[in-house]
Image 1 (tube, rainbow, N blue to C red):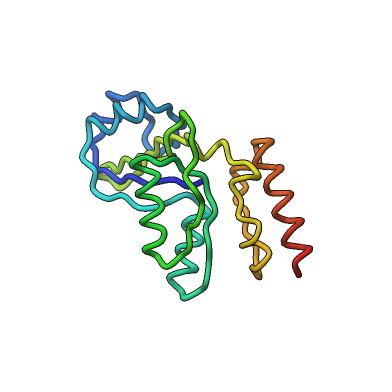
Image 2: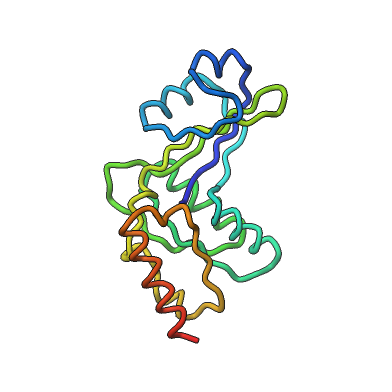
Length: 170
């Protein structure tokens, strides 16, 4: 999942007002996302998601890595693309045409350092075989797959094809 992490400070009252349990992870829709973002001040944005965080860490350690993910040509998609490239990782995935916006996670931090996450998965949930750069996989030594996408049949198909190509290329 190509997700933009959006970090903001809030108080307990904000969580109560928005019916959010402190420390929880909530999947939200785009309308909920817009409503939350309208009422809080963004402190920081950064490319995120489990696999993206791993790729950025590997790039920071000097490794030649590429992230493959699904974004739309929108504010969050463009931010994700630029930010992950700034880490030194390659990101050559083409933006897709979809009604869904790019994924983002609003991370609400309360004064006691608890985080409450509200995540809109958007375009990333429609990951499919044509989103993968198979040529890149052929030229790689390692393939790392994020398990969160395994629920989708199209993503599962993409993963199986990616593994097959990785095995055949060695």
